Length: 185
Image (cartoon, rainbow, N blue to C red; front, side, top):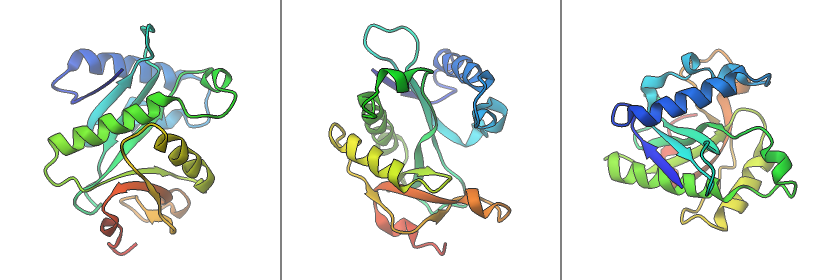
């Protein structure tokens, strides 16, 4: 089950999101700074999603829908700051993506279509050279998602500033209109 919501409309769900994200940020993890709520620019997160496995009370996946003002109109990042519980890798030794990821993608794209008038394109991006990871995600998601993704041939500049080229040029898969990427990267 996936619940996608706006923070101010569902403070009860945001409290769960906030608690779980803080727990995740406290883990000894390479990217733990990324998951600290104070580093998330909460006001730029349009919506949040929580995924629950059947018959499990605690969240299985958390993520958000994000948009930078510097991006072209209509482009939104889904699966932003995605969190998954410790041990999921051990549960899925085949490296197959949990079907909740596809359900979350569908929920977030549907939320954008229903709530954002200029929505044209949803992206999933990674900071480092991650084409293989995105291809693997795309292939697995296509098995159960109603949305179809394409991998961009070129990396895309997704930062507001020019300070860190290594993390700002990102590999991207997208669903929707390809034309949004013609904005001068």
